[in-house]
Length: 133
Image (cartoon, rainbow, N blue to C red):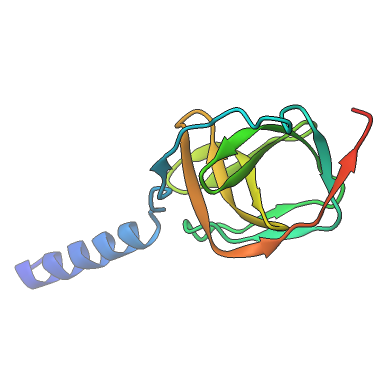
């Protein structure tokens, strides 16, 4: 194989490898604070929620998913799912809690990283308060 062919093969292989790599989930450190008067409240979402995190791996939260309030971050109320696990995907999988503000899902709180990752565009997420677990 001549030098030009080797370079062409290397360039093609490098391009294919880079195209298949997922990017890191963009996140910013946040502090989870107690949500006075809201801690422990339970909710479920009224309909399916289609969300697009900045990592571009779409997420769907099924209608009726149950949540409990675990606190607040600057971006909104943090809701931990109680009967399922939400994840955000990039180069790695991250456990995620919903961050809700003004009737919309605005992003996800990543509890292990203690960070927030936003959505490309907020998604409508009407909540219904639950009185029983």
